Image (cartoon, rainbow, N blue to C red):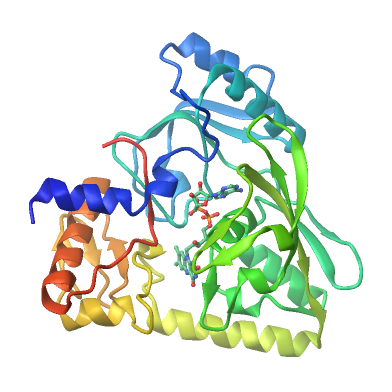
Length: 329
Ligand SMILES: Cc1cc2nc3c(=O)[nH]c(=O)nc-3n(C[C@H](O)[C@H](O)[C@H](O)COP(=O)(O)OP(=O)(O)OC[C@H]3O[C@@H](n4cnc5c(N)ncnc54)[C@H](O)[C@@H]3O)c2cc1C
């Protein structure tokens, strides 16, 4: 198959993420820096222009954002969204652990929720976590408060918001089992709450109203602390033994086809260890691509194409991306 056709397929399979999280008809990144300054004007928090994104990603790969905003709180984020809506400026939200940012970077505004980190105990096992709370931090909170229900997520490095959107999961469970409700900022900057009954959880994605997830209510269950802690420790050990956690990566690259393992298929066709530049199919777990040091997004994409081509040719299986590929070449 021609290279450009396969590349189109790779990109179309991550379509949901190549567009911005908040899109408006006719959305386009402002051409002049002055316009971009108007979008971020008065937004409390950190604002960086022409900001390196690679440091924000677990892959350590990717070009710059026109502007990176780390809002101080939910109100500051709502203001940013309102201003971006008026200016038709695209916004992309990123925790950074399941994305490949392309080498040309991301036009418009990239938002990190790194300052939305509050966790509140609402009683009766209900915990409210802001969208930027890291899953590992939330799991430690659950252990300290003797709450079960998140052990399945031990070792997932994403934010609570990202895990909700991706319906993150493992063989022990997935996000959907714990979610009670979510708080979103809609594309016009309004804040709204949405019960879990209005969300549709699928394999590694959640259908929810358009917007930025700024908080999630989770229903957990009281349980002896030692028991919760032991399950988490055991699962972390299992992941350390089976996944390439000492090298930069973005988790599983491909979704598992029904009743099959993408990693096993890749191994079967002899692509384990395959390499393009500094991007390599992990020798420890074939569904991970690792950055051996200085991989570019182009290297990773060429490697992904090779893997897809080999698997399709030898097994007939068309692998689907779990990884989100975003930005410009
Ligand atoms: C070592 C390693 C192990 C991993 N193991 C697993 C695993 O076992 N299971 C699993 O499911 N995943 C795993 N992952 C992948 C990743 O951690 C999850 O997919 C996680 O849910 C992504 O969260 P994030 O905050 O990094 O979001 P990102 O990867 O940055 O974003 C993912 C998508 O969600 C959108 N998004 C992010 N935050 C928000 C928000 N607040 N509001 C609206 N949209 C948002 C983004 O725009 C993007 O489209 C692993 C990753 C690594 C690096």
